[in-house]
Image 1 (cartoon, helix red, strand yellow):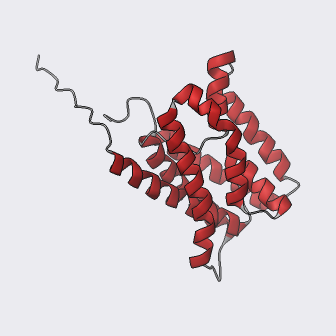
Image 2: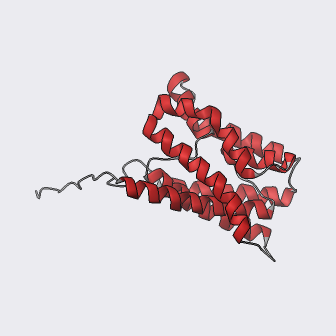
Image 3: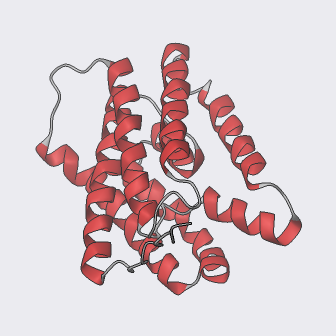
Length: 204
């Protein structure tokens, strides 16, 4: 039997990680801008930030940044300082870029359903870039993993419970057609992540 040559795992360099954080957060924030312009939302921590933004008229970036603050100590305990610093940087960049995009891009006509679905596609690709470089956008995902380790609560179940609460709360904030489009968009985003982010999928 021929010997199978195993791929050599080469860690990402600092420059590669930095560029990945930049490109990934640019994509996620652009998707967020499309959803915000369409009056849509998504799940998880970003969905909570959307709700607060719609209810209080605060900027999405500010709401998203503040919501994530309590979760960083959990990230340090479970993921370590490197992951936490990357995640903090990613959250800060998404918060910043969602504001900067609006200074340079203005839509004269935007189909809300197209914007919601395409925005989630762009966000999904951005998430994959961040995940490949061991970063995330924090929040509920970190809490879910910590509770799973500490108390045996399945991370997927908590994530689903939070997303369900976001959807139910959204009934009082966004029109039903946009809520349906938001749910479809979130399903597309999760499908992209499920297809492209699995253990053992990549050599590095």
